View (cartoon, helix red, strand yellow):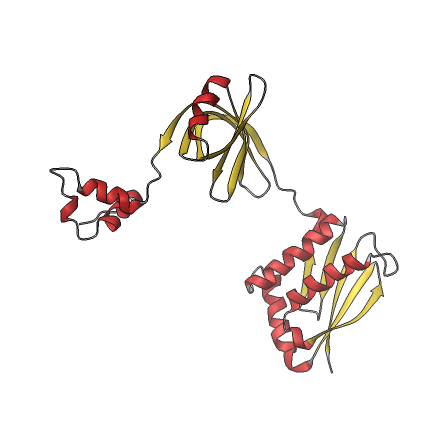
Length: 246
């Protein structure tokens, strides 16, 4: 006989009112939580706000049971824990809570809308620096906007004065620069710091030459010991990381 799991959505939905695309999101996340995709089957959508019912083929039931038990303890494989968060996020967005039941010893509560809300901090103002390659300079008033690109990240909340902007224009697209000034920062719900505004007052051009070129230049300086290094690139990387190279 197949095992049965019920995922209850305690919120505004009934089987007749839950949108099909939202139901599909819940079903996909529940399937990821249960695992064993070839052995997990959708059985029904029952009343009681809305209850998704899944059945598990007997050979896979012990694996699913252990997986759910581990997730309920805050453990389990990464994909199962990610699916738990996806279900809980869906419940929170739907102003709902949830519960997954299988047997008396296999119950997972989903706080959903009742979970503690993450805290934002800031904004804070602080002297600091930002750096990257200048990809845009524009503006028609006393506040000129500068865009820096650092890898895949583009910083666009940078302001400066016309005089400094004119100097920066010489390095547009060509050089990596470091801007000094005052930044306004906000820590978001995920714990990362977002730059809301940065007022640049001065800058310096950084040397973005490849490391091999830097090593060759060091070796060419008379009287230095870089030519005796067996692996000068490794030595430079160790020095940057603060490791001793004896």
